Length: 271
Image (cartoon, rainbow, N blue to C red; front, side, top):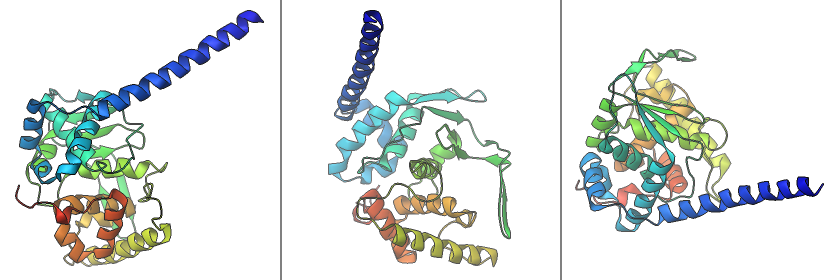
């Protein structure tokens, strides 16, 4: 009996030790600044970061450190993983959650292809059908995230066109933190579920109708695939075309601004 109790006590001790050690490592990484070399790479690869308010830069650097500590990058189809790739993807993923406590807690792996890659997924909703032959990004519920480096770099280097595959796929990761990908990420305290739901459902129905009639829309037509994709394309526009999104879809902008505790309209526009 003594041996059993001793073994259980030792096991509990090691579990507690690991939990405390991880918490200390997390705290240390979140407080650690990036090196000047890393910052230069990020600013060059992700011009959008230059617009970030000064008060958010230290939190972003800490989250990038934690992200790089947690996530392993794997090159696919001959793609070599470079420091530029890791920093670019990490910076874009972390800017999405820079001012909130939500974290990509189950993500451990990012797969990077040189360009588009094959996907066998087919999604269908009413008269809108999307066949995924060659795709530029995928996000799975608990990871991994799969990215085309060509699309990743193109999207990062053009911060004002509303097209960003990393923001798009990590919007799905944020969405999935509620337990499933359903266009309902964990909301902020006091944020109305009913108002969020009504805003996205009504916008989706209107957007889908316009797309089916081949009418011009501000949000990308891909958002008509389903509510999850509407959320993801809205996130892209929120960061890259904030003024236009606030004008075209003010209720969507308001909900995202509350969710992320950010207002990119107030950020400097000179990149």
